[in-house]
Image: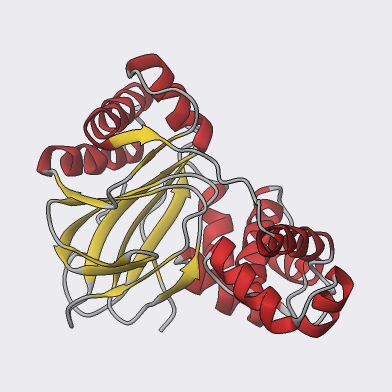
Length: 289
């Protein structure tokens, strides 16, 4: 593994997957000007900052995460991220699947069902060091160490801060409309209706649907759709599709349109993302300026 730069004003990022741990994505990066728009993840997020400050915008407010802090975000929780200080932030993040985390919970804790975290950030230097050591082990090709350290880290955080998440049933008419709207957008990702047409199809008004959707999913329909399109594009890239093909399939106007939104949400351009997914070991990749 080549050395990743730790100084200067340049942004860099490496988003990859270690072949021996296919249900875990890894990101190590330095961001200064880069801002993540509101988005969510299908799995969990465990991140730690080694330098600088990251401001994470969540439904309950903004978390100012500095060195020694571990940020924990549950699946499908909308959030933003940006630099909290002029010099930006350097961090290592792990994205294990929901299955991985819930399997660890069932094996090592008394938690049952779908697990999660009530706290979004905790000061835990040991857990922070474990996250960094998972990265280092994966970068060195040490599957046994990477898997072991990941399980120790997840167990520690679940034991100290975990709880069982209770799914919210869409009881209100607004919540049901939001769920129906999401299903329509998922089914017509490449050719979505306007907000007015969507509301008419569901028998409600545009502003009522907008309010209900934001309440249910934490972002308006157009922002949710962009996030969903990027997720779909990622799956296509993982399967070997060219970025231009993925852009057309999921409804982006062209490849530059995909590049812009993909880079903002994932943190690296789609071409760099795909190259790293196809290789087990690689040096850090610079973001375009």
